Image 1 (tube, rainbow, N blue to C red):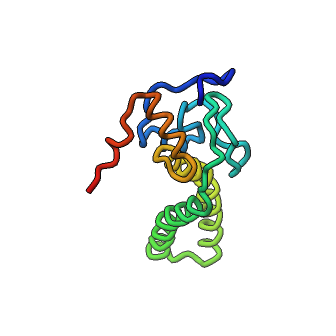
Image 2: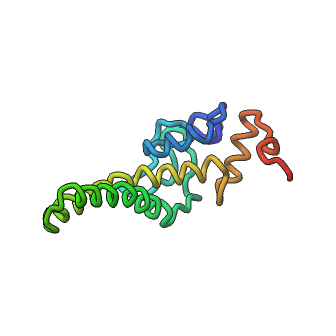
Length: 151
């Protein structure tokens, strides 16, 4: 993110948490919104090709998969039960419908969800992103202590 690195553009405006997460869900760099967040299906790139933001600190681990299971489960199970109550189809019909729906919904949500989690970590300075957050805040003129009220 440093302006001294050749080929990378320094970001001089703060990025809100919601914007960072939306950019991550869109699988784009949470910092600039232009670079790709992933180099393959679930492999996060080492850095943004547009702004140079470092992603090596991300630790999404299994959390995106847990979130996808919860979301897909809360959609598929009620729909399956509603279909069972309304029409009582044979088990093979239920399996033929709901297994592919579950599979494609889970696979379709997994990468965007991981992108959103990486963006959440980036925006809040979790794990190794804390130093980068302090540099961004200083470059944008944001007081980092103003976000953390002491109780």
